[in-house]
Length: 428
Ligand SMILES: *[C@@H]1O[C@H](CO)[C@@H](O)[C@H](O)[C@H]1NC(C)=O
Image 1 (spheres, rainbow, N blue to C red):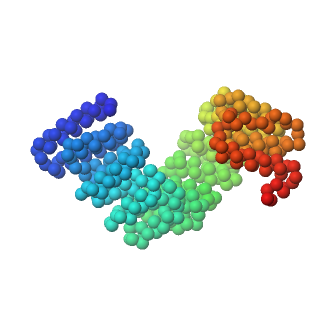
Image 2 (tube, rainbow, N blue to C red):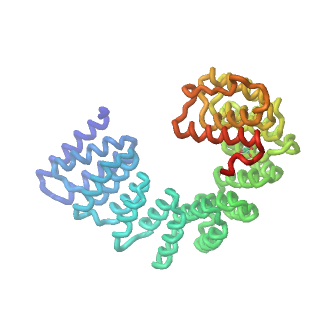
Image 3 (cartoon, rainbow, N blue to C red):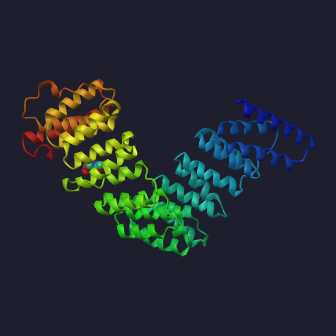
């Protein structure tokens, strides 16, 4: 315990003893739960939890507010066993049925990725409020149960809950995005317009992102311009939509618009934008962005440099890809190595591929399964050439499990066989 918090504890203890001697049950609870609540809001979740247990030793009964704070603290520190214990306390407590405690439990189980536990809590609640529904929908959506999120949303509407908030819409649009079903999302977008929530930055960002990822670029743009005060995340979503959607011109004009509005892009903006340039004809635009990247210092971020490298490789400009790799060699990570190896592999330059691979083995980045699949592919492609011991990949040098190793070998052998006798290898 740090000195500050232990001081706080002495005060709680003092309060507790004081109140205990007065003997007023309500005051005890209020005072103690206010302290626990206050501390849970600070980063010292663990101290809040230990205060909770000390509080019980003083015979103070936690109320719904105490439960709400302490369960939240417990989720933030990912203490699953403790969470179950707290759930037990909630069940036994006279204040446990309060929605504040119950809703906190749903959020906690979501944080622990235990959707079934969250559902058990949810379905036992007789009178659910908006937070109950939105916690359950968020849980489904975050943990990959998109269809369940949608049907929970439908059920909520059918129960006459008509005071929706931006978080419900955010979860639902994310679910539609992950399902790649913009047609579902469009109906719900209509509903969010009725609720006046299409102006909201949070819901508006989610709907823009959904349309953009599903490739509904016109709808994405319309949704974006409905947002009252769009934040960087919404702009990034729109730029990424046009970049991946194969419209580099529009992506770059949105980017220039940002700069005329004196908005500062971040590394996500830059990386999304760079993905717009995938063919030699787009390279001149890509180079303009590269200049901007250097001027604004984004090239100091390894993730941005890796994307630049991959952009040059995708535009078949190997000399520039290699130049970037040389610049970042001293700080290259696994992604950089795999990107440069893939780049030369695509050009079928096996000499470079193998020499880069040998350099990689000497570097601090050990090959992973992506590297290995690439290398085995390279062995396949150059099977007819003299490659000698270059095909021996020393397993201890790679960060691989036995299973990945076997998968990689199968892929490699398959590729090699295809090289030798046409495409018959995989028929058996
Ligand atoms: C380059 O192409 C690969 C394969 O299509 C893709 O995964 C990657 O995102 C592209 N990189 C950039 C920067 O566009």
